[in-house]
Image 1 (cartoon, rainbow, N blue to C red):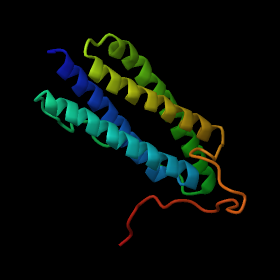
Image 2 (cartoon, rainbow, N blue to C red; image 1 turned 90 degrees about the horizontal axis):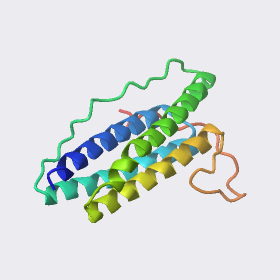
Image 3 (tube, one colour; image 1 turned 135 degrees about the horizontal axis):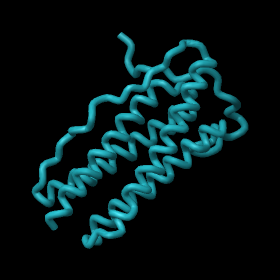
Length: 167
């Protein structure tokens, strides 16, 4: 039990860092379907972090948001070609990061004696692999990341704004 708390805290810290990277990516990836997928991923990561917070609270362990600050993801150019190239780079980075996270944590999770917490972490690892699949599909130019639109909808034109509110 003494090893469980630091393990859950470390896992949560890494997952929080991923969430912050994905939030930064959502500000840069303007293509509607890809941005919508980032919003879905961010939502799922919020849920995963809440599961980890509840588990730590039940173990009477502190829950801290001590991730390493906001990630440095920036868009060097303003034109569409530069934005598309940055999006491709971001998709590739996020796919690699997701696989590295799973590779790093899978053996540790499998060795956990606590079945309840191990199952929770396995679900999170599975969802992380699903995120990797989304990033790989976006990298390949797919737009049907969260499902296919009906023929009546047509092709979306334009992009999502990088900030939610404009004052």
